[in-house]
Length: 366
Image 1 (spheres, rainbow, N blue to C red):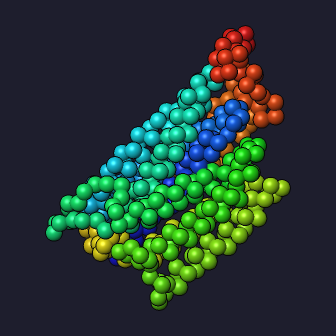
Image 2: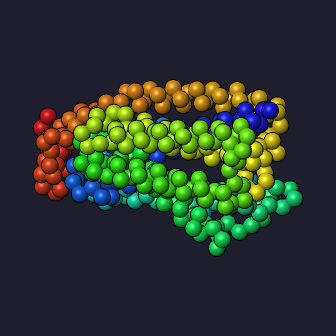
Image 3: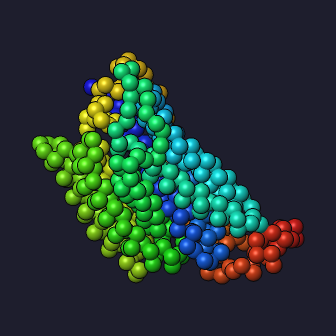
């Protein structure tokens, strides 16, 4: 029983990470197609406000699996070593670039590109990791991983590519919906509906193709009814998100409905595969730690979940409004007036096109 209760923790962490850091990564990927230098910098400023707390859910996800489901952690992690390492490297580069750009307006455009490429690399790596968890993992009698670590095998190339593409498209859809509510972004407005359609298509294909894996979704009984209800919620959310992503629609609710679409699909997969937590047949009850350990973990990790949830709500509440174009890093006024959504241009940042000498001179004069 305690194992089933604990399952809520990693599922909650996974859902929170995907919908929060998902839009962060999506904004970074979208900036690869943004030609306007000022808007690229604004996109980084949007991410800089909350990226650190968003990624805290990834750390908590790893802790909850390591402590609560050691059999899953021990067998799955060696299977996806390569994409996990690539993801961490990309997140490091992306985090460094975010802070550097946010706190210094004379940074080179190469750091903006590093931020965007790091976002794309992290999304692709996460797609490979998620795809790896849908395949059968080879373990010995003691539950130790004995297979070959790799990003795919010949029998599942199509499914792997589908999940990788789906991860990138879903993140971009979340990023476009979130970016619309923060800044004036013609790119997000133009791409929002297209990305939403792409996300719906790939999510539908993933749910369908999961039937060909070692652990297909359950469509019978109460479990099947719940899966159907969740997918219906996803469909309704997609329709409402489509309406809110219209060019002339208010931008405030598009992200919420897009996030609900993603959450409903994720929960449908978790419910449909229950009680199996790791292919081909490792169940929640078998993978969990002893009950006494679970009780202690619920107390300790529960406190951390409360604190991270409070900080997440607080940070997104504080930065809930549109990005202040007259602000510098993280909403603090900068000496040179920062990035103005209705006026600034490359020339405002100085003759070097990277904001250096001009910003320093104005700061010194003030």
